[in-house]
Image 1 (cartoon, one colour):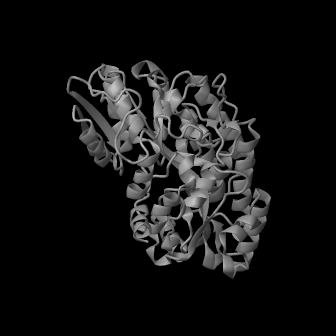
Image 2: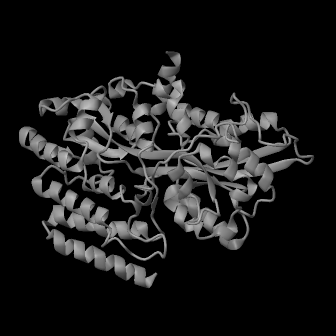
Length: 453
């Protein structure tokens, strides 16, 4: 019981550092959890250990580690160095993800000043996957031996297309779910329990029907934002979204899932059940408290944002699954810049840092959703209940969503291209612009961007 209360407190800080459109769908899940004790779980307890040769280095080794956002890696590093007295880990933490990644870019360009270990947010992955010569290939250090412990889609986010190069080891993830107001569901005659509500919207066609009926009965919006509505469908694209992973060519205009996402969002705008609020705006946060809309389609870490903005709505929210699949928004990886002089010692530490026991500790301490599917069946994870969400076992829902994500390629121009389509939808909802013309303009802008890049 005490553990559950502690988890409830820590999950309130579940806001993760990744909030870029590029991550807004980096996901997928085909999990293979076979090698649960092979490197990823060096001991059955949380005691620090490394795989293979446990002999400490004869010389003192100092490792620099740049971390990002609200993580518990400094505390874990202290645990590790207690059992590895010849290793010292100096941590530099920042909350500004743009500055964090730009500082590494500057250091790599100058061939000076990079840390031994770097926490890389998924939204910046493509930038650094294109600079593989600046990083150690973790496959050469033993990463293949622990790959099976992690969600397949998460692992692939940091892999070269052919899988021969592994840039980072997986940490947290942001699988997408449906947060919904039970009081508003009941007012519209909808089931308020997660199983019943989920069944009522388990296809996008059914969700559209429910959404229009909800709007007609209550006068309120069903979905909070155009952006999150679009993202939810966009991120269910098979393999690719806007660009081909084979040759990098723009395919957004021929990807049926992108058009489906666009047309579905336009339908919501025209039928009046998608609001015209903006992501991160004060009005959006206030709407969570006021009950201005019924659902938020967002990642696991969005739970913290809802709690922060709508504390008075505690007990009125629950979580269900998205129709037809899930996406991912957010999460990070631990990488080793090649400037570091102690790759073996650095790798021994990072494979311990992201093992099963420590990902559970990070979930309990900071609300970081684990990328190790074996944890989704662990009682310490499964039994967590959150009073804000009506005592629901929300970790179970996040685990279900994580297992529904499919691998998808984004490409280095994803963010800019995505903005073209988001702006098109913005023009439709704010200026009553013609959806077909806006689509054509977004496609034209994307193709021009591709030609100039």
